[in-house]
Amino acid sequence: MARVKGGKMAQKRRKYILEQTKGYRFGRSTKVGAAREAIYHAQLHAFDHRKDKKGDFRRLWISRINAALRPFEMKYSRFIKALSDKEIKLDRKILATLAKDRPDDFKRVVEATK
Image 1 (cartoon, helix red, strand yellow):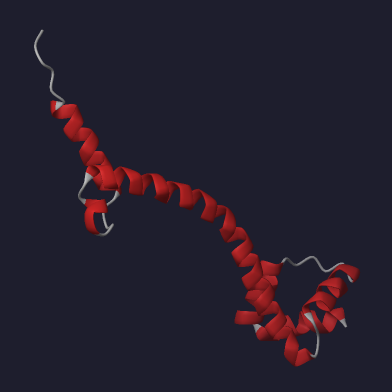
Image 2 (cartoon, helix red, strand yellow; image 1 turned 180 degrees about the vertical axis):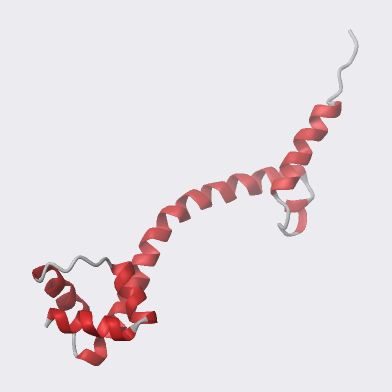
């Protein structure tokens, strides 16, 4: 039987792998074996970090709200409790945006909770 070489399909497979690692440094962007491993790890971390991103943003919003509340001599935890008592339904993302970009509107929200 004649020997079958990889030929076209092997080249296509390698090209696809190296396209995915465009921009990587050193051998990870030029050597197929290293590139394959780099893709594997990148996809693993991408999955984990998509999940982490939600918590990271929540922490950022809480910090921004807390910092914006300090001039009003109020703490974050008491502010959130007051919001729920007054049944003001604004999430942390909106509150953080107000605190950062529209301080006058944020001030009105704070005064509504007092």
